[in-house]
Length: 129
Image 1 (cartoon, helix red, strand yellow):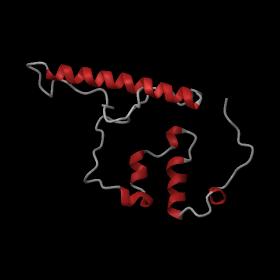
Image 2 (spheres, helix red, strand yellow):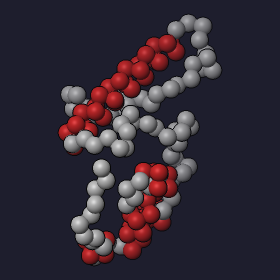
Image 3 (tube, helix red, strand yellow):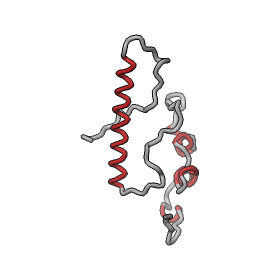
Image 4 (cartoon, one colour):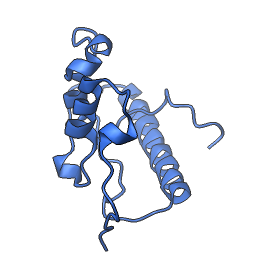
């Protein structure tokens, strides 16, 4: 069931001191209920407001397309349920990544024989999860 807004609040009213280019980026990249209409991280990083934080020469792009988190956008979860589902998904991806690294270390295998199908989440801090 779709959520209907009771009253519309303008971003200018909500954040009157927000710089104009920040408002533009938020409207263009973030404030879309339909995920297919939202901008990507790459789109947001290309926006003028984030120019100081974007250095294409130093940034690595994931070459295998968008990363799927395994939670359907139409699934309605509480914040805690969403958090737990993400931790579960990260843990599964981490295990798959370890398995991939183990397989890659086996003798007589080359990098072209094994194609990664997961992203390593080893750098994330799970705080005991």
